[in-house]
Length: 292
Image (cartoon, rainbow, N blue to C red; front, side):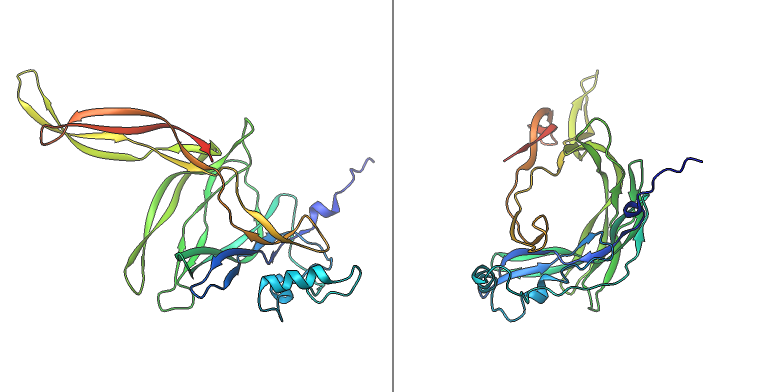
């Protein structure tokens, strides 16, 4: 009887949260702000670095840490990482390692208030072959009287054909969140579709238009114009500041950079008479592209 060889690693790909630090900028005192946003990775029973935060203990700044790392002699014992062993949940070949939920924190930097999404934990999630909207929970105002959990949604599905297409949001909704200062409107994903990396989505505007019928009488109508919006991701400008000593492919600290943006490429104009009898022209986006 012929028995097919088994890929044991594919059957037992463990899933857990790992530290993933990004450099946000400087706070109001001029000190660097590094945030552990986390990442979901697969590890199976090996000794891995516990966290970059543990390695930073005893250093007043990232610069001091890098200087000390550079001055160490090759082969010298390092106290920057501590290993661990343990059993972690396993994901089968038909599942992926994904976040169980995200927490949205606000970070006050020199140039203002910034939002950052932090992965709290990871779990095994079934792979989806078609493009669909899936639940995605985000916690706002964590550990405060205003703490709120919202299903903002996400798009899941395998890569489509031709190459370069992916499952992305194309329809949106909104949810209201109470805050200590005001009410905030949170955008949520309502529908998904297969699109290129940089793509156009419908965005409808309404305008009052004056027209004249066959008898020459003036009529006021509501004109609907799909002006469009450009969405999607282009080449990232992020760069790695610090890599793992045991695995050069693993980045421990990122700096957010400015990559190319998804911007309008083509336009069409809609001209009409407004309520005051003046000629009004509204431009509508017809296509989008990535531009530095």
